[in-house]
Image (cartoon, rainbow, N blue to C red; front, side):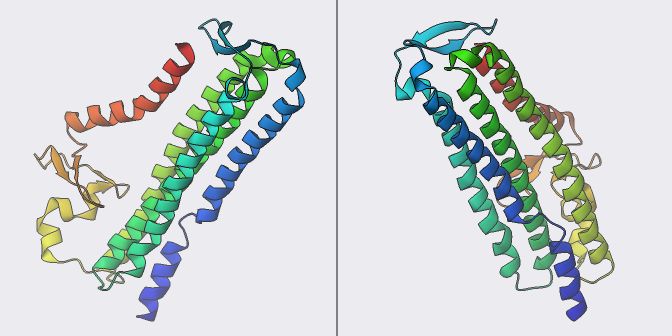
Length: 267
């Protein structure tokens, strides 16, 4: 039992600490605060009306009367994004430890470890994206209404998109690589009989075989004709990503956020 606990603690120790994710979010909040304070110091220089929208050529094409709402609109948007991020990551943090603490049988331990790892890496992934977007909104805030910096507005929009895309795809790559490594360690401990129980139902059922789940999350089994399968974690269904339907769904899901951001800045 002590050896099993040592292995569980070692694997659990390889997943990100929730504090790391909160640090990225705090950086986003700090950037928003500094941007708002700077604009407040330049309030007397801000024209009335104030530009509130930029066209495809990154030139102002819409204005509004000077007010707290019109001037600080980017900051308010950033606050909404950061608040939603904070609520989501809090739930992820709570749920990441609930399963492991409630695991009452040996068979539940590997699943609880996988849930914890998935949620902790998701927490970090979401926090990095939100922190980057907070910084991006802060740059848009200081360059949009302040005349002395309006020539940098185009750069601020470009920076916003660059930070978002870099954190999205860089974070996704890190997530897949690290979460997959943790899942490999869990599988190795299962094969060695240190944790969990590999019953006959797992051998006979391809969806119960951890080897058919890429990075512990995505079911990928070309020998299984099923197009959709039950989710490995939680409730609901997911695709068998070995078939073309799953690949199309994944491509659309990954492309939604970049497409929305691109349209937001172009329209």
